[in-house]
Length: 382
Image 1 (cartoon, rainbow, N blue to C red):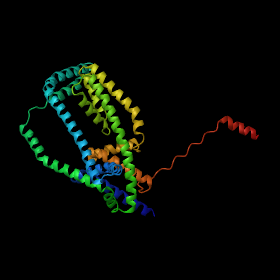
Image 2: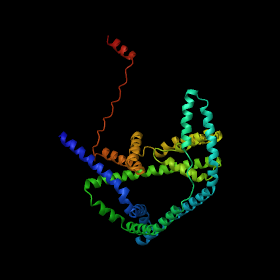
Image 3: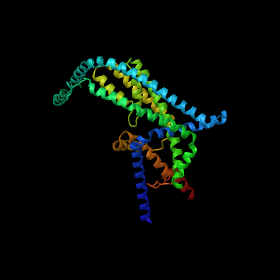
């Protein structure tokens, strides 16, 4: 009996490892080929209910409503992408125009930074100051600014690769839009056919897991979008008050970094504060650190209310998953491994798999009877 239990555990573990490996290979390689159809399937799952509702309310052909809704969805997405690209290109053009001025100011900033570092080192005891100064001078002498010469050949190669990829992008877009229409039209029949290819137990657990993951991750993503927008507005106000060039773009970049697992606004704002202190810009350092403290305080207040316990994993387990996923699979693993762990935790809870033992709840400690009551009870017995 124990041997069977251990064998069952090893087989389950092997299936899970193969499943994770298969998911990684699918996302890393196979998804590149099937990406237009994966996007089409996602779009079809979003459009299915609106198409059914409009078909019933307006008494129109489902085919006609599907065509209109597919074109409307991709039209809205395409317009948003084009407007975003126009905005980014405009900001990059302004940044490129200002770049020579920024580069010309770099030597003066580095010289000021070096003078401030030396003034700090001079306050150290002589026995400690001399080796530190030699070390810092050695590092400083080994660094030089990168050359800003433009390689015309590389620029031409980039333009050529973009031009060559235009037909691929066009075919990708056509395949995505057309497959979306077919999937919206026959969504239920296609999903039923794919589900019927799986064994009953896998189909049952997969359906429950899909519903749970869609609900849980959907709420989490909506909550994260709200938090990112709040952080973006806070950073935008702070950067505009600091009169930074390209304040909106910088706020967007820092908000995106803040949304990445393990990272946060401190990844940018704390080094920025240290740099401002070393260069003698104390007012900027105070403003940046105050911005960081305000954003952190507001996030700590709103994050539990918005996200709640939607993920359902211990924070330490999530951190381990983020780190191991990043070390083994890069940025992709930081998202893939935590999602896999969430799925395994629910399958374990529902009894479909048995990878670890769930500890029995600790018995509640019995309240200690006060000494006065014990003595009184014994006195009564006497």
